[in-house]
Image (cartoon, rainbow, N blue to C red; front, side, top):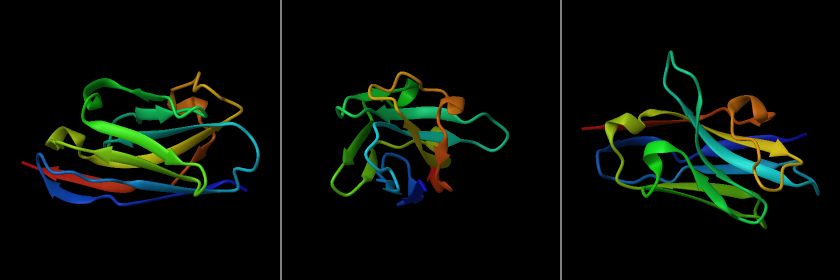
Length: 125
C-alpha cells in the first residue's frame, strides 16, 4: 500500500525559505512520477513541480527559478526547496505519486493516484 507523508511546512516571512519533505512507502519496484501540488481554499489544486524517474524536474508557473524539487531514491524521499517565498505561495502543499510514468507525462491533479495529507505553508509579508 502506497503511503505519502509530508512534513516541513510552516509559517515564515516573505523572502525566507522552507523545505517540505515527502516520505514515501510501498512504492515497490515500479516507475513513478512524483510531484508537489498546492491548493488554496476554494481553488483548484495546481501542480508546482514534478520529478521523473531520471530525476528530471519540471516546474510550473511562478515557482520557476525559486523552487527546486529533488529526490533521494534510497530513502524514498522527495524534497521541495522553496526560496524567496512570497504571500502568493501560501497554500496547503501536497505530495503526489503517479505509477507507470517514467517521464512524468501527466501533470494534472487527476493524473495522480496517490496523495499525502498535505502540509500547510503560510507566508506573511
